Image (cartoon, rainbow, N blue to C red):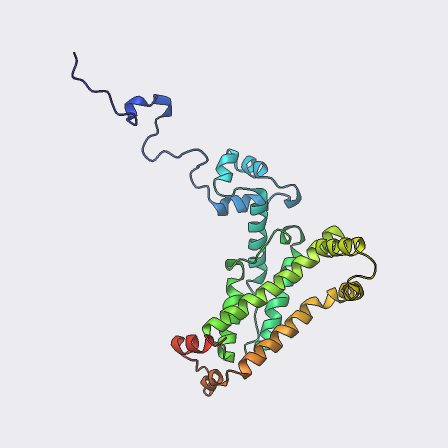
Length: 261
């Protein structure tokens, strides 16, 4: 009887030659030098309304799996393209340093308008990514800190302002695409199915809301800024750090004050 032992089940000797992978060999969907940025650059040359992952793969001369390894679906690709376009448009946005309230408005309106200019792509940007807003967000954060906000408060304020600007643009894009905002259509449908006397206040104010949509961002920013002013008025100890131009509280001081937010 032979003493030779059989190779273990996972041994390469048990793997057919055609299935063995050499060290460093790329797996399915991989291609040398294919990155997310390369894919986005190729997609930018195609019509976004007819864009598919297969079309991008064809333009790059690769298998579709090579593209989906980096970007899994069409909506994700369009969202990334929209964020890139947004970042390019906002790269040169300059905020007024001397007036934090004006800076908030310039930042929000600039973000909203940039999304509206990218009508096809903007609708797919479900959230404004940090990198797309990085440069203007850095400016606004610094202005808010100079105005007396702590680190935590400035971060929260920045998130609120960004969300309001994004929602304003998205609401307009959805209305333009469907002729009516889908949420409004659904609310009206529910009201129509209810007895006529129910929810009279909603029935009265909904038409007014439609008229006010054009001023939605201005209204939202007015409320936000008033809230920020009220918060600062109740935290005067932060403002004392502005007694000398350029002076700011230390990170520890900002954190301790921001905890009161």
